[in-house]
Length: 254
Image (cartoon, rainbow, N blue to C red; front, top):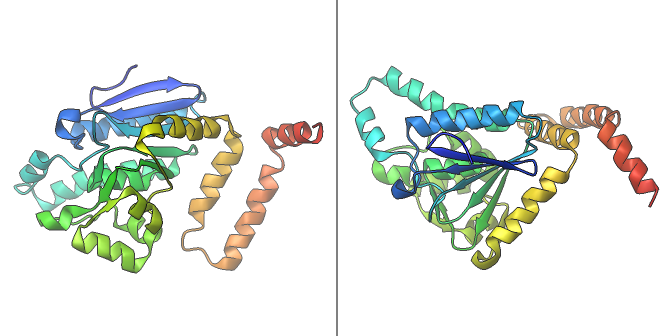
């Protein structure tokens, strides 16, 4: 295992597991952790052996949000200084979205505020039944501003506004029912179940997953007709890949 103290990194079987490593602070996000996460995403992008990124938290919680001491100190900074800091955090969301490999959040315990934002930014969110999700920033006089774009697109106007404006915390089954979580597993077999999902992704065609992810997010805000045309383009390109040829030939031989 290697990596910055704030984020532990392990690579095995095509899966890069990044573990937020401030369990004594409920894995609160501070400036060093942001830098470490950006470095992890760059590594995942450049390393051909990495097929999937799994993001999780050390200890009992996934991530309880931004470091409150840093947030308090930011009250004495200028708007421009705070904007630069916010954009630095937002870069994680952009890098996750642009990475041509699936990013999977493995959530146990609490995923709150910026921590819930990190989970929401992942392509898949796999949660233990006892996990909790929410954006309680408003209760601290703050705004879930960076994640708002993702939240609205993921949940729709009414539900997204409810969560952002009230700060209410959801159970994992509630979050799944709203579309914030992909799958929920019983706590007792969470590790076994998520390992199966991540292994299956790592064993899938890298080119097919990359094209799927790219097309999926390009569809945001696109007209129906343009979406169909984009689909035809991706369809055409996917037929020319070596993965497609090999998989189809193997299937026909069965």
